[in-house]
Amino acid sequence: MDKTKIKTSCLINNYNYADFLFEAINSALNQTVKFDEIIIVDDASTDNSAEVINKFTQITNVKSILKEKNQGQLSSFNEGFLAATGDIIFFLDADDIYESQYLENALNFYKRCSECDFIFCAYKKFGAVQGTFQDDVIDLDLGYSVIRTLYNGEWIGSITSTLSIRREIIRKFLPIPNIEDWRVRADDCLVWGASLVGAKKFYMSKPLVMYRIHENNQYHNKRSFNIDINYEYKRFWKRNSLFNYIMQTNNFNYPLFLAFTSINELQTIPCPKYQDFFTYLKIIFLFEQSVYWKIKGIILLLSYFLKTLISGKLKPL
Image (cartoon, rainbow, N blue to C red; front, top):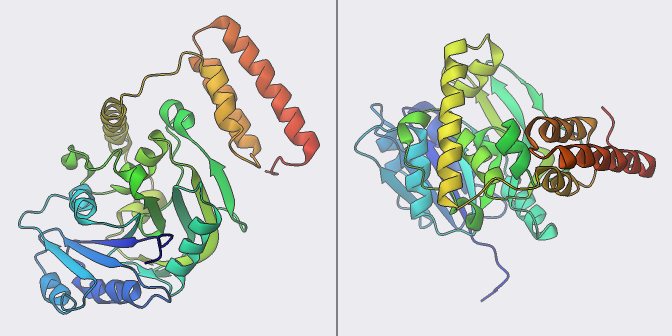
């Protein structure tokens, strides 16, 4: 037995996407490197999703969870994770598709960067809108992001189907009990949760996921049009509740020397951007309680900025 083998789980969450589900499951099955298990969680669909799922349940590595009550996307993440046995968990929305080499590329990335806890990759849009969405044209080590998430609400990640996370990270925040808050957009829980519990995040520049654009896309539609102020207000309070739960579960306390901790976290990004320095400067200025550490932190931050600029490691705007 190969003790170095990484066991993989693919969690497919579905609600009334029977028209797309067949393609999604097939894309997970037809990888150049096979998933050890594929778990399909159906959130009490009222269409013929169960029939589609049943066509795949005879395949050895395919499991299904057919929920009796519709409870939303976070609930599906919770149940899928509790049933999963993989070392790395991959997430796939039932209306999206993996490129055939997605898992192979992701596993190579995890093996090459052993400190990697969380990967999100570029993706291609198809359907009502077409195009490629890339944060950058090269792979990136994004370091740790506990402080910038906790104090600045940073959302360092991407859509559900581009995400993969090590089990040892996910188990620190899943399952999350407040499922009614996250019936949709539960990828927020994965992205924010991983940051708060100390995941080292990486970006993979190859667009290996196909993101289907249609009228029911919660993420795309909210980003594409003027967002209702009530939606953002409610999301703010849901985020606070989520953060409080994760912090309490992990016995996490606010750092005493925020300026020092902020600079340490910034230094985990090998090639920071101008925006990264501005973010930590803002955090130190607004939230450091000690005047001494506020001033010293700003001086140390500016000194590190100049050092990074001179060394050529500062990424351009």
